[in-house]
Image 1 (cartoon, rainbow, N blue to C red):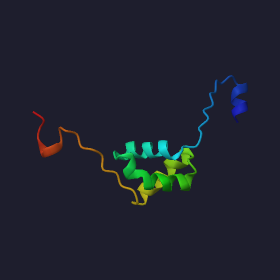
Image 2: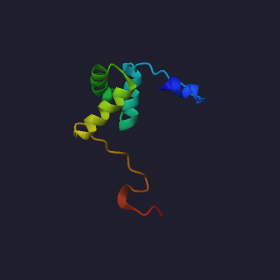
Image 3: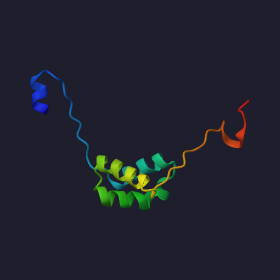
Image 4: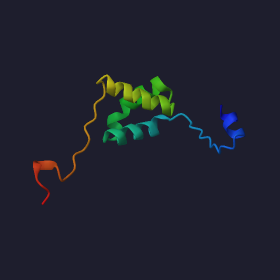
Length: 88
């Protein structure tokens, strides 16, 4: 299919993703969940073991955990929302 697109003149650019290692995976999860890396380290180890660091599978595995209510996310509240004030 890609070859056929190239023959038709399409400009394709390939992106090669290497497997994530524990440290960058931990950072990704920590930033996503708004937690520090040490807090999410056990989760990062589990995700690494289950996905072998494949970026696509990491995303899918985290979505699956969330859909099964095994992983919850509480986004930080805006300073304007805290305390129920109107921000004025």
